[in-house]
Amino acid sequence: MRLLHSLPPYNFGGLEPELADFKKAKVVVLPVPYDSTVCYTSGTRNGPHAIITASRQMELYDAEMGWEPAEVGIHTLDELEPSRDSPIETHRRVEKTVQEILENKKFPVVLGGEHSISIGAVKAVSKLYDNLTVLQLDAHSDLRDEFEGTKFGHSSVMRRISEVCHTVQAGIRSMSKEEAEFAKNKKLQIFPPHSSQPKKITEELKRNVYVTIDLDVFDPSEVPGVGTPEPGGLRWNEVLSIIKEVASKRNVVGFDVVELCPIPGETHSEFLAAKLIYKFISYIFKSV
Image 1 (spheres, rainbow, N blue to C red):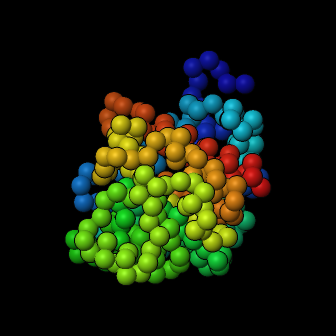
Image 2: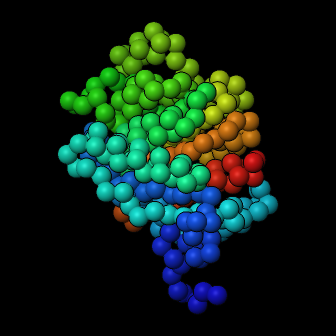
Image 3: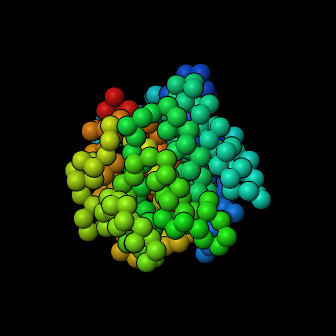
């Protein structure tokens, strides 16, 4: 029993040891505090800590699904130490750690940090799973071949991932001319917000799916604390409908939530992010 006003353990969900033990846990959370290639508002390196802190205040019972997802066991790793000088090295470290999570037959959940960390996670997943699609929920297409001197920044993450496996993008409402031409030439499947219907999106996915969620997929009125906000985004229930449909119809093999940029004095963006992660875990493991 926790004493009145005592703080819950520092891990995702504030779980007691029996639910956070690595050996017993089915889910492993990897925090990656990295934002060295951001081009607008810095601070996403503080995202993982903010999400974990907010998650300690969540109710663990999911009223919609009728159970406590924490029962599957959720272990939180120590923060991964990124390379401050090399995005490629940071991605390599993410890849190595996610690969170790998968080798232990655990389900990886990666917390950013900036979006480029998804490159490492996807490389790890692609080594284990064929017939793989990466579903990106995002405001931006992130298909630039190079931006500000690097091919491995957050503006190029989906360009690099498209070189690894099949991709589907939803919620997209901002891209450059270069990105639009690339998407057209490669016949990439992109759903803007007004046509991001869950069933249509899911029909385009292969059997195994890794989901990368940039929090700016949400409208800024719901999630203002992001690195590059974009008006006209999806709402909470719209995003939940998408991930619930995907979890019920496909084999989700991992996911990440990235680009939270905490606003001092406000907590609703990080609480939404924490709740989103917990809901996705609920949908995935209730569907198994």
